[in-house]
Length: 429
Image 1 (tube, helix red, strand yellow):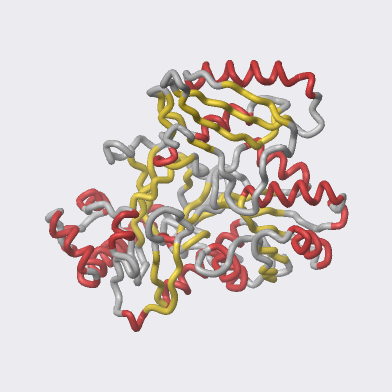
Image 2 (tube, helix red, strand yellow):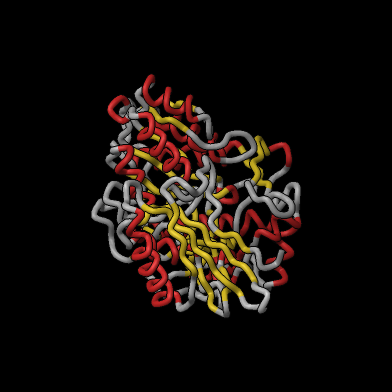
């Protein structure tokens, strides 16, 4: 029995629910937040102007700058006595993005996070090892909140501490691991190195927080022997992690359209892109009380997936996060996203999943790119020159730039229990 899925049964009912939520959000933000009211008045729009879903385009955009400008309680739309918790983003530049939560916001978050576990087909007998950060971050508490709401056993280990992680996998027979993609790779390699795969009971891994390449996912699945790898999106601004999940068919991430509207827009023109084309995710919440979001520019890039999923859910799907619009590298007048490098590496046999892009400026004033890529575990180093040639050719053909490729030993590039740093731009140093 599905306990956490939407009660609406048709797309038409879902859209009616979205319109009701959109009207409520605009009215709530307009009368609850001076910052939102000023933005709407500047855009010459009032709550009564929202009569249909198409009217969302009349509303002004919200950005990370709005959150930083209003620090420490940006866009707060309820009285302080209704705020029961705050969380902050893990950003490292400028002021952190701090978000406030009411009791209902926390309850809503717990409900739709539990939906993630339900969509991954967990049962009440599953044991969920949570290996993400706790504290001011939304990650750990979000995974735990949803797990307890769902009714499975939560094992809140936190990030790092590989000895404890491996011991708990064996002793508690954890069946689900929740972590970043980088931590999943680190754990998979550690399980392999310690030779304990036949002593653990993992069946599923749920990871998010960063882009994961096909090569990385293949390696994790092989080393851990799990049945499913699930992608879980989320961000502090939109409650936290748990805003969607791909089902067991893995044809795209079902997102919770009863909690927020997702627009996919061209990052430059801010106009909608055709279904199936890549653009920036822009979100508008439908029930969020403390800090509602109205057309919030996430900077995350993805695409809507047309058609219906084989699972039969009416919930729409978007692709995995393909990168960020502000992660774009401009190299010799060519716009490059790290995800393009991911794609090339994932389709060349003999390469591992880990890589680094290093950008330097020569004495001649020209920019130079070096790409370090790991050799696949057990691969003969005598094949390095052939791998180097193939990668350089594919980069030239697909991205239209030249890069000096270095093939390095498997495990030579650093591992992390958080997010892996892929790009090192030394041109401004």
